[in-house]
Length: 453
Image (cartoon, rainbow, N blue to C red):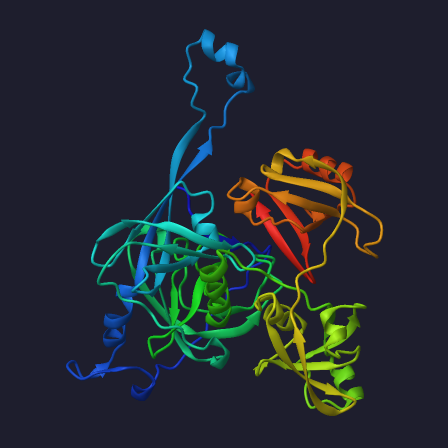
């Protein structure tokens, strides 16, 4: 059975044995009937909203090249079918009972021909794909069902390291399983799992099949969608990651409204604040992002943003780093006006900036690429500044390229960690690559990664 779960393998894994004290009676929900601290009352309300997801895809059969020759196949009376159905298992969370909306991971339903949702009460429903966002690995499904139970979205921005959490999902296709732990870290990025990374890290046991499942707090609120793990064997070693609910909400709102996420342009680049930089600027901490460049004529320039401004919050939400700034801007739709709280020359300041659509780019010599079926690419014309790459000019809706996450206007700047500056270089790298293809893209102001296996 094909497993629809992502994991990152590190060359060296250190196993540390820790001893922890049991939480006090006040730290956990209390069961009045048994007289002991217990999560059972909480789970009784929460688990009906977590579903199992079975996905059917088709995979090409690995065979001898001669089998692809139609004359050879006809001579030996071989069937024409060259693909077989495969099934994978994942998890999902009901977030709107009235509309039948189910959140899961994009990689769970990617390339799906059929998606079957199984509720805790064993009812099964065929699911319809409403929309996806490969950049955050989120997908929205819809089922036609009555008497559903939904989870309310909690505020992941209020989480602190050490908060108790519960993970619920379908590990290894066994059926609904519950594990518990704490928030181990916040704002994890740089894992090259997704384009927009702001993960909650937890030590609650997460395994293959938990993808798309719920991470909840002790109020029973959904504060994350379990997405990835780090493990040498693809199984749990106490390091799991979840997409925070604040990001899930932004993606969900746009998918419901547009069927996709439409990211706009700020027109400014930020950098992390070092201790020395904070000292020289008279800042109280290293949290925030310092603006390094502002593009001429961009929304940032029109809104009054300047180099060396320190962004501390967007729409009242604290900005912890340059990656956090990128993520928060990337979650805002085109046309929305955002409030940026700044520190300029040691004084607090607030500016308003309207997120605009990315500038129109021109390309020449558009061609089709076999590895990106449904898309056309072209060499970038002069005048783009320092950016070098290959422009994606067209992507057919629901084509393989579209389902992988490519969109018109994307600029391919690298494949498998090799720079790409022209169609010729792109084709050469693709021809030399036999395994997974890792595309580095620019979309508007932001960089993201798309993996094709």
